[in-house]
Image (cartoon, rainbow, N blue to C red; front, side, top):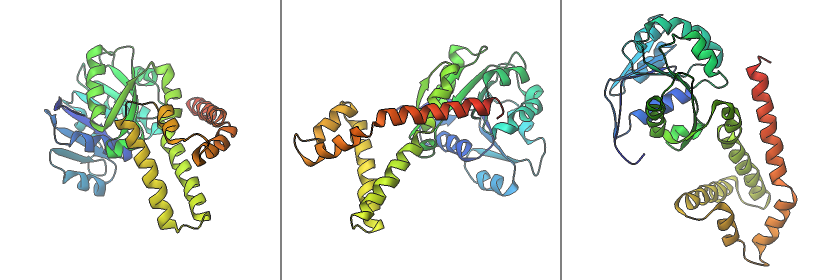
Length: 281
């Protein structure tokens, strides 16, 4: 996020990891929420913790069973960030408390726009999002899909919200599950690679602490180099790989492992599981 941004009043229903990540983005310098931020949480302890944040009205369902209805009244944007199984009951609870035109954004994995639209009044536009966990540190990638009732202005407003925690890719909803197998699950793939290379470093005689410095620092540095470079990952790899050198020999071994096919198979498996979950399996 490079420029100052103003967002209208927003309610975040559910303050788990993703709801809290988006909240942290809205509280950054340069972000103004003109109509205030209201956040709901099931427990009083969590609500009290969030209430200490400047500009945040924190409501607990322990204290007020109607907290979600209270939070959405007058909000221009409502983020639904509860667990997927809780979404239908939540939508039924808030449906008649929403003002016409309120933008409702799903942050609940696997819950379709059709589900949201079927449970909310026809005057309520809906968008579906798929953020990933690096949103917690402002380096997220969020997939964003329009609903049948949403406008270009709604999409632009949702983009502004998620750009406070990273970058946004707009895709049709039928691509969102595939996107989740890349950017949604992607951090786990990176952590697995780091985990395995760290084990290799330890096996070569480095202490676990040394191995962590070597591997974590290398991944972070490589990612930052890619971010700041105008070169593609392939060009940067070739730049590191001297002809007939040690890196070339290692890369040959990795390429023999058919990593492209492995990633195809892994993401296909994730996509198949996503469809099973959507079907209630």
